[in-house]
Image (cartoon, rainbow, N blue to C red; front, side, top):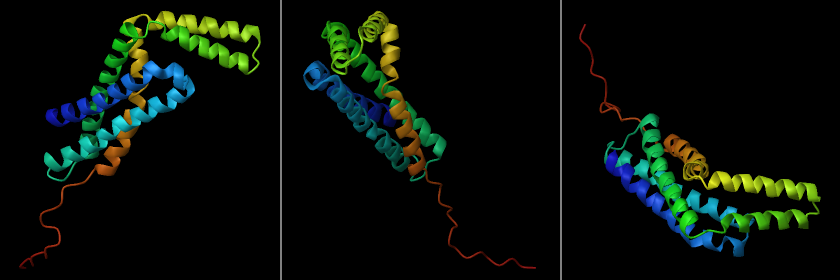
Length: 184
């Protein structure tokens, strides 16, 4: 199981990392709202490898069969590895290449509120909320934990669906054969 989980987990993590590196630096140009769609689309695409990882395990290790529990275990381990790659990539980007990320995001959120006609009290509350979020995100452990909860639920859902679809019981070797007559 280790080889399958590591292979598919790292490939999935590489896909999400590459997509993050390709899109996050340009978030201010495409807009944070559209960037959210792009980001989650990339996460879903990367987690498609959970399905293929479970299927590979079923065919190559399980001899064509796998229980829901084993399929779930394979899928969730792939999800954990991929999510960890996602967090590591974000931490590297955030602390080394995106020094003004929160300022840009705060300005975007405030401009969006102003355009919508929000009162100054609402705008001030949003600015305070963003300041406290920035303080939390400046702590690497909190940052990592908060970033982890972006991809993990998606991977969990895909793991559950994949395990349900791919589970297959072992075929009975005597299935379809006539039952021998028992002498009285």
